[in-house]
Length: 109
Image (cartoon, rainbow, N blue to C red; front, side):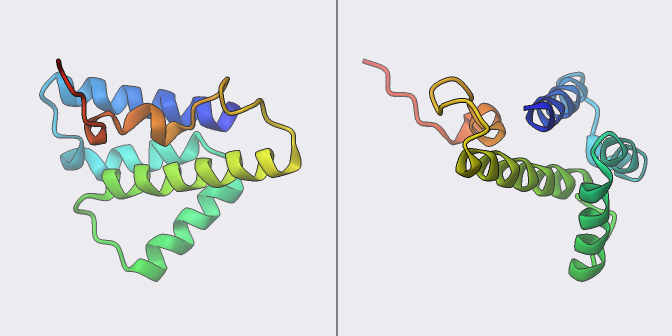
């Protein structure tokens, strides 16, 4: 739950910056380390390995980091579901469901 909440809060702050007209990708070199430090050490270690393995450049680093964190959170949520230590599906929406609003098609009648 805490990991999911942390991801949601980071995503909200990035969306707020974007809404203010700030290009968060232009500040990726500053934002990425600040964001990743908020997460547990093991996720930070996996991020570093991921960056080296994928040979990521600084461009789009914030977007790639948030995609990586979304996958980490999803994995954690699924693992907790399997172990039975998480609330039922109808109580908790995953982080990806909460923030991929653009991918949902809304039909108007």
